[in-house]
Length: 110
Image (cartoon, rainbow, N blue to C red; front, side, top):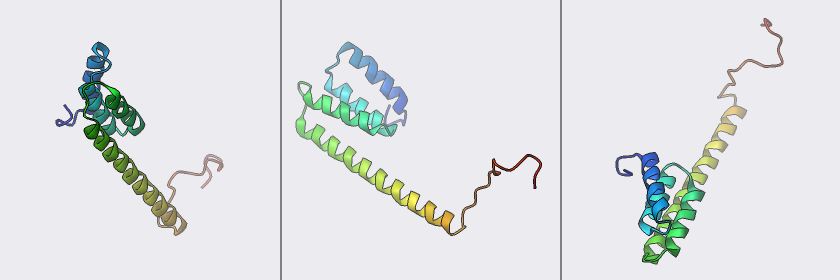
């Protein structure tokens, strides 16, 4: 389902599997990937951590997944900060306008 770009459905299916077996490492890893696809990074990291503790889990695989997730979160954070800086500069330079009317102005005023 993740390959089909349906992370919400994948998340539901993982939750069903985990209701039957809360320590299913495969379901935990897939749930973490679905959560990451939904930009729910903290929850994804927690699922990876649970998978790491589960029986029959390849610790190196899960550790690599956690590193990849952390790298993604860092990348998104840097991009967000950069975008915010560009927006602030654009507003300061008058390149972006607030097109909403001033709420303090009385109705009917020009």
